[in-house]
Amino acid sequence: MKASNTKEEDINSKSQIFHDRAWQIANEVNRLLISLATGALAGFFLLLSSNLELNLTLYQTIAIVLSILLMGLTVLFGLIALESDSKRNYFLAEINSQNNSDEDIAKHKEKKDKMTERKRWARNAINISFITGIVSASIYILLRIFNI
Image (tube, rainbow, N blue to C red):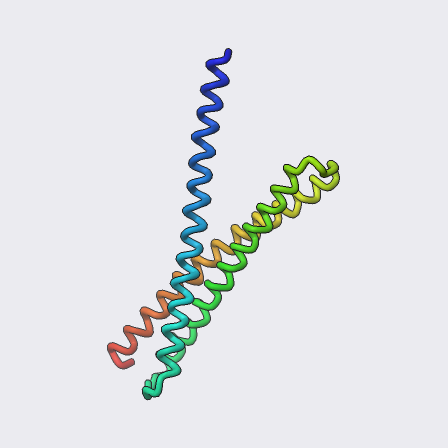
């Protein structure tokens, strides 16, 4: 019977390792997308605040404005995801605290679940806004190349 428990513990231990790794990778992707989007905003700022006369067409202006808005949203959603993760971990710590009543634990679980859902939503929003921002920036570049 003891060998069976050891095997189950080994499986649970390996499962936890993979869960932890998935969490680390997801957080690293969020940080990278926030950094890339912030860099793109800085690039757009430098481009648009320089003394160069850009002579943008209507389509080029729409593409660059859309890209700027989407990169800004990527940063915003990334910060929401990080804040939600922080709060989720706080509520997990409170749930595991020994000084809480059953009623407090239930409230903390409800708040943790809300933060988990908010983080999931924000992560999806990060991916969508970043990808569409990159597409919009690519369209802008193509419009500039072909002078449309």
